[in-house]
Length: 367
Image (cartoon, rainbow, N blue to C red; front, side, top):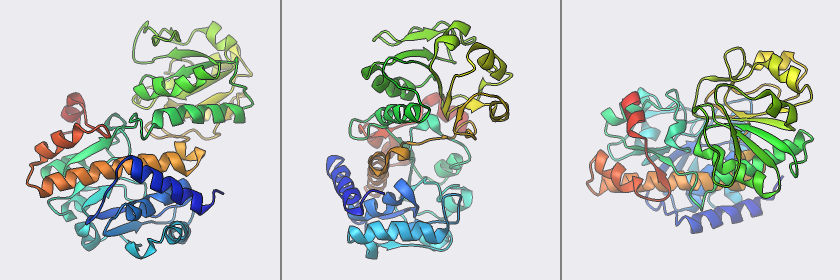
């Protein structure tokens, strides 16, 4: 366990690098365990007037566990008096909030919760809008009520989530007993996150073979990575691979399974010793579990969710991501307070390096 003093130092570093200033604002977020215990103390250190840190029992621990972990760090940072720990979501607490984060315990941000928000409040996503899940936030209710919503630019060089994902892949490969140096790693994914994440693998000497499931005959990045045909995964590539990584966060279509790019039977027949590392993407988890293949983790997450997050690397990547999200939310709320319309606030803040807006196609689909 990392010492709380070191975590506090990372919080101060992120606050300073992102110039995060929450003075005069109330933040609604979560209390949590592990790396995610840092969000509420971060908001308080950045000058928030008050932080509402909500939690419930979960597979990661009880509500009491989440509060205890958050309070311990807050006490180290000398901000515990700024943080409240509500027992339930209430109209009063939500109405006091200027910035609402879509952290795990805060979700779902449904129509009722949005009705409770003040007119100048904002919702900040702790990811990029292409990752958006309808179950997280009722975005139609947000825009109907004049609540602006934006995402966080995870590629911002002060946040660097894409690179942290690459570091996570290295860690997971090692846990699967694959030495990355000199190994051939087959990566299935289509987003900018995928391209950013495989760079660290390249830098330490892996041969990365990229399969983009969204395009046919796609050309690999300029640095010479290979790419295969999206109609399937070449059997020779499977036979030569030392690991298969599923890193597809934007599609619901199956990657591994009867309707996927490759079936479990094809994986077994091509390379029975192939470890399958699932970060995100739709796979037939039951078939994988019933096969002789080594799968990491044993129970892959459903499409749209991640089996592993950068929190596996410790608190620092999470602190930087949450700091970015807080900065986006604060900027939206301050724009609204200054008289900007919802659209004006979104356009103004979306121009910031740290922010990320929904594509027009996504907006049409969601609204």
